[in-house]
Image (cartoon, rainbow, N blue to C red):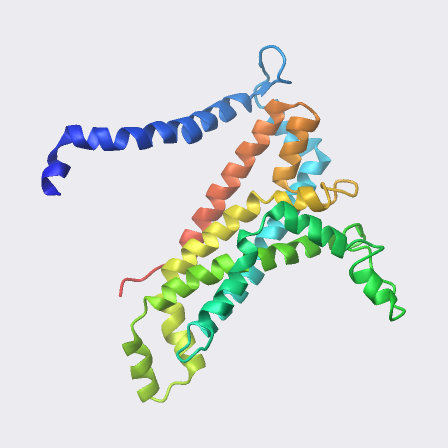
Length: 294
């Protein structure tokens, strides 16, 4: 192995395919998007340079943009509270000693992660339809169900709470698997020593498990935040951003501007906004969660 690492020609040969793939699918599109963000282009003819006009419009005259930012930040916070908390608690329970049918429950909780988001969106659209699903069941008891996906009377539209709940159900298993992997790496000696000292399982969880899974928590929270900022599939398939654009998020607004309004320059500016938010949120998480060396 040392001989291979000292061979510069071998290093170049092994790295070249990965570098080319990275350039083709990551770096070049990002550079093109940044350049296009300062232009006005409808896919016909050549892009026209407009400077910062797209970014000025984004925060001055674009009413939907502010709604999209609000909803995207709501999804970030809601996902952190639900997916991370529930995923961690389920992981702790399933990782406890003597837990029976661990693999069965692990597969059950993780199953929604591998189901197509489009299929889940279609399923829950029927479930929350005003004339069927949950409302039909409530009608059997004489209860008038709400307009789950269309009620915009709340500060945060009811549809966003519903979609956030569906997302939490779908992606909670991903957080659970990450935390289970981290907990599995903790030596049993810590728990045995704590048990000898008279510590309860709850005390062991807070004083042993939580501190030792901080590195994985940082990864899981960062992935959750970035995924929430790029959230698109459930929104598009369940509400398409409606009614009256009240359930738009950044990714759906980008899609509508690009392929609905044929404003690819403005859509590129929105994509830069999403990228900047992802970088900022990642930086905040890294600063907030400090990992000590043990």
